[in-house]
Length: 184
Image (cartoon, helix red, strand yellow):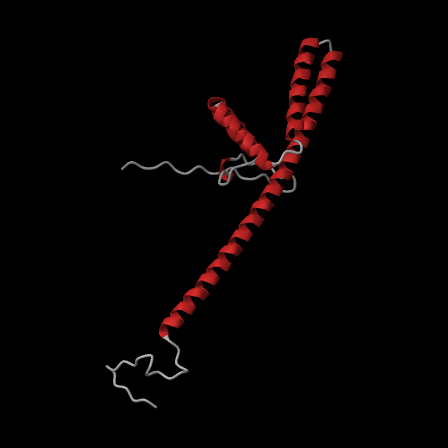
């Protein structure tokens, strides 16, 4: 056993044959760290690709459902057109037929389209007609907001409703307004 003082350094030649070189250990650690980093990056890339494929698949099914709903709407318009003709409203029936044809074309256009293809076509349209695209997006936003507003009650508005009587019990008591603030 070699006895060394605290200030003494041992050269690699003085070390035994079984003692590893510190530079080799650092190099091995760096190689191992690089391998782990590469494997982690490969896993992250694979997971991201899988998530992207799942999202694309779900969006494609949503597009297919939307095209089916649009197709049903077109059929309803065609039925309405027939009813208008029966009621001697040929001008309104003609407009309804034209609208039904346009709606039918939209459904056919969406049917079987890939989400990536729809996105690239939308981007192309936005570049060619930016004003029309922004106006359309604004109109869709307004319609969506109106739909959401009419389809449900926003959170926190329970106190703003009128109290309705329950069929199996006594009538509810109306909400009591808060007392006015005092200005002393």
